[in-house]
Length: 57
Image (tube, one colour):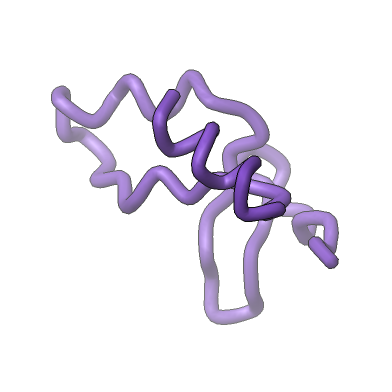
């Protein structure tokens, strides 16, 4: 919650929760947050569909 409150106070449109390692049990909680996006060589995409993520102003 602290990260969310700080981002809101700073006027940021999102919170970056850090990296995720597939198969790492301790990091599975991160998959519950939505929208879930991943960074590819083509840019940020929706984790499930592979479609480009919406642009953030």
